[in-house]
Image 1 (cartoon, rainbow, N blue to C red):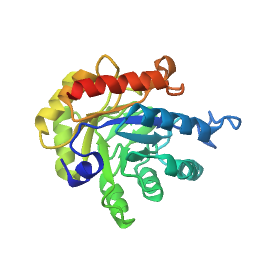
Image 2 (image 1 turned 45 degrees about the vertical axis):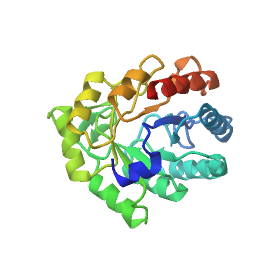
Image 3 (image 1 turned 120 degrees about the horizontal axis):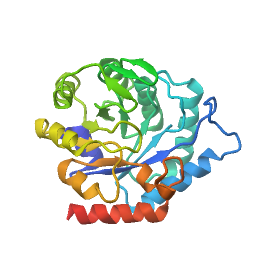
Length: 266
């Protein structure tokens, strides 16, 4: 594990709960009557009360997604996290879909412990051709004075098809060699859809000394198997009312999920 990963998450296999922010100003689905702050505060409290190891704030409902996020979106996210900062009691991260530079900037501005994004690869996606630049994003982080902010690399992009036809384990191994991420994330095809266990196991097999985490679709009945194969996971949809990505977090579902996590860890 990298020094950054160990400092943020310790030696346990971290389980990170998502605070999905509602559609932000300027996004097509934005509803001016919806209280973004109150909704985020309720989700944050539910995750922390349930005992999640960390939380991550993301603009999940800013559909259609963008490769260069609107300045108003980043500013609003910064405002919301700033209002909640005194209530955050666990490590936290950020993700501005699908913009590595905006994600890094938001992480630095809010004092985040980690940032998640697609930093490497070349994809054909729902949003068009996709070519993120890991070198530019990591240099930006360091230039802004936050080399300690952990960078979690999603190497199997949702809503996209990799134009690099090397097997996923080879792409993950190459990303680690060329970019030195603090963790490698393995995803399913879309939000809430599980990564194939075979993919998770294959990536971990070639990266025994790197944190490998499941990024999407972890459910109550699969979390024990996921934690047996991986070094942690990120979870959102499974914690929501009726398991629906766009609903609020159900405190009972969040608590029962972490009860299963604690059993799996022992």
